Image (cartoon, rainbow, N blue to C red; front, side, top):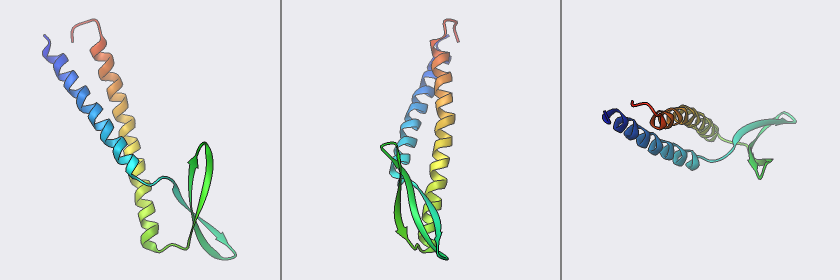
Length: 105
């Protein structure tokens, strides 16, 4: 009778560990997004981010295509990890509510 609850507990523990791993990976990524501004026909790049609730622009100047690609990759991975976290947190919520239930599972 308790075996299904054990499986759910184990899955909950795995999900909580995965959540920590995703948060750790997100923390490794540099903050902000790269934007391009055109000034008098020349392109300049800035990194835009939030600091203490305020939007900050940090001037990066002219960037090579390799650096631009690196910022695009970071944005891709940040979006990917946030999507994973969203799904995982829904799963954690479901598992916790299932384990709390009064009826036997």
